[in-house]
Image 1 (cartoon, rainbow, N blue to C red):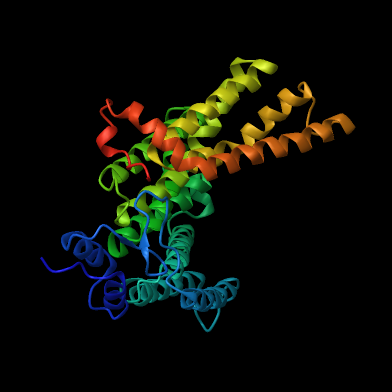
Image 2 (image 1 turned 135 degrees about the vertical axis):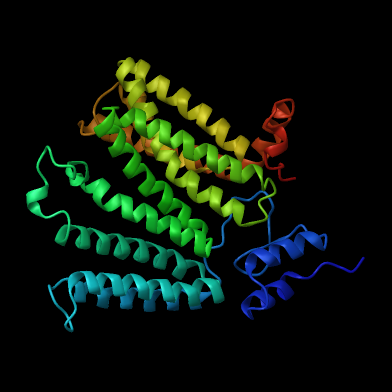
Length: 363
């Protein structure tokens, strides 16, 4: 059997436009190679939480150009009429421009960082254009009464979030940029939370927790399809978990604070962080831990300082310094010994139904 294509060969083929990144990944797997192309063209470590962010400094250069174009459109859209165009016309032209730039920079050049910026700009300008058009045609001020059929759209999150969500979905379907999934999840939450609040009166904390868990399940499904972290599915999972993490952690901590008092609250938060750490180690993702660090810091401080608020006197300042040291040591310990700890943890999970979907431990 012929030897596998080298990372340099695959990278050169992608840059030349002969194949795209997804095809390069499939070729690598088909030829028997287990390496993943990293940003530097070297094989990526299979179970590392890595995602492609830059192909090189040219991506930064391209991003600067995109931001300059965006600045021009922002200035043009800040007035009622520029070069004889209306607000809607300027915003729509900006959205079309960013879409065309995506066809070049994302589809052909596979530039990740410019693609991330372009996705945000396209979604923002496209949604803004829809909002402006809606305001000046159907939803004029006389239609915003409480009994109006348009009253549902009075909420800014729904008025902007709905077209933004649609734009993000369209962008992802066309360009398959993993970062666009984060935009879909973010604006999806804005639409779902406000809709449930208006229709069913469900509290925001319960909506955030339920939505965050749903997004986390989708992220885990992406990871389950790529346990070796070799394809773009791993990047998709990363961005979804980054959105889901604060939606899960914050409501859980608020629930603990509402059911416990004093030192019991801090102790419960520490136990929660401990279990989040075990879960993060099992799935080899750090997003949930990062989202819980603020609450973890406050809980450690309360225990060290006897519950004195962070704005306390000299004793409080000393406890705060010690707290930062303890939390910093905890983060550094996990960062340095992440893989050895996973090596000890994973054997205990081998008998569970999720074992085949967990990333392998790094030896």
